[in-house]
Image 1: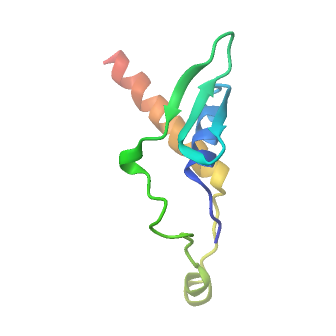
Image 2: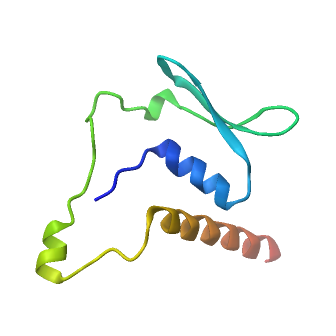
Length: 101
């Protein structure tokens, strides 16, 4: 029942990884947006790839959990921030284990 942008996901993921960054956006030019590392010099960590940009596909993608809640008694137990944290920490752990092997 919530909607979040890819930019929100990216920002939260870097926050979990303790990497301080910020979005630099060109007004009216979303394809030139970049997520930059905040340091003594700005380093691009993420930039929009036109190949994967879908501006005209749909205005909003949002699941409706009403039926699952009503029919199954389901309720969400993980917030957006908790989900991002689980994903990032899993990837960090996996990468650490692979480097040890």
